[in-house]
Image (tube, rainbow, N blue to C red; front, side, top):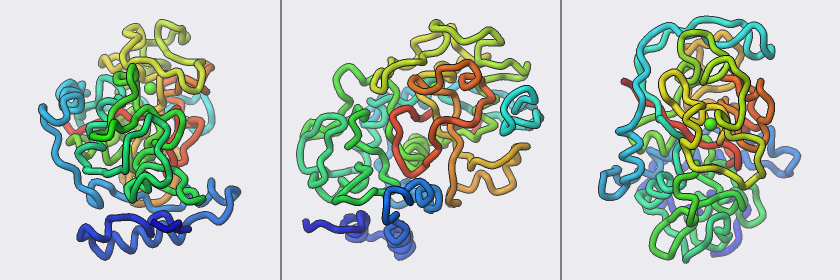
Length: 341
Ligand SMILES: [Ca+2]
């Protein structure tokens, strides 16, 4: 393959009967590519997120071909319908005003999505790479599907891959036969997915990303508490934080940090993508902030293991995470799926 300045131009999708709409979407993404690194941040938030679940349908998960994902789906926690406190008046401006949001019953993952689970999805997408590679080491010339798995290719910043497997903090590689978690990281949270990649994983599993309000309700319950476990300050038994860039931990390691509903690692471990565009409160699901195809920043929640080392950033209402560039992967951002009840 010859080098191309437009990452999507080398993409195999058009050969697979993809629609004209998809072609336009991909062409639009290529045209919107930033010309300089300085333009990257701004351009990143302007792109329409691709919907991989329609662009690239995956085989359905079963207990045989995706056991980790199927088990996670079965283990989702039920959150009852109700009116939940959202935001705080005694916190940062973007959390004000404290208000109540009525939510339908829904379900949420007990734990964050793991490297083993996300590797199952990549395998059932039928993604092809040219040979084995270790986590974080996917080469530029690894085949046409590398465009869906790298943040840079042929010298160009590649917006909206599914996951950045060229990033040193990615823990999924390929053994020559299939995508696999790096040894010892199977039950660690997957990181380096874009917002569109996170959304596609959840949709594939029969779930979706949680809204910002659902995330806060699942973390905080109905009593207005500050942290998932209550009002006591975070400590090492409740939140996995203040670690080195590559030092994730197995999911669900800190039962003392459980939310009122039993969700684990909502404060600390990796921050988590929500479905919601970053817009001022009060939260209103009907005002356009839940549109999946609108460009813009997407809220991440929950604090992360590397950067969010103060108590306020670990509170269940905190909504100003380190990075909300949805078209890029991040070492400190992972996934927790939700679903209708
Ligand atoms: Ca978390």
